[in-house]
Image (cartoon, rainbow, N blue to C red; front, side, top):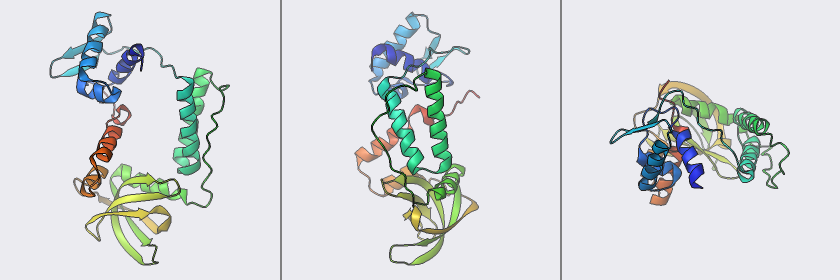
Length: 241
């Protein structure tokens, strides 16, 4: 990333946040904290409305609007391919949202005439993608699911689970959940679910995808990658509201 682009990105990351540390900015932008300190000093000297205190982090003055973001052709192509993959392999709500967002980006930037990237994702015609919506809803609401499940040996069981994540493997989705029957995490194939019903019971404390990865013995590279994903700025809420 060019330095000028990084400075703009810093302003975008600070927008809508009360405090952001140099360490957090460094992780998001994949540079050293020392680089962030230099960048912040230059922004302040240039007159950018940035404030900072030792031990408190950095923040923007209210009312500041960062300069508009520009996408490269490669970035737009990546968004196009991502929207295609979601349209073909995610639930309808997610697929429609991806297509709508991409259309808005193209319309705003006037980029609808860019070459179409030659990367495609064939639809999963026979896969029960509609099951992803209630599962995702349960995860977002931190609620359990009563399920009936038939495994690959045709054994059927009924159990209460608390889902923590959906994982796509290219040809199928799996659901990671805390199983009340086994008192441990279990992975279920979404296409093998026979019945499912939302429970009003909240998830037990400390049940999460991160906890599952730790207990499953995931290597440090996997844990670090997952941690980076969940520390990306788009997972943070605007705490100024």
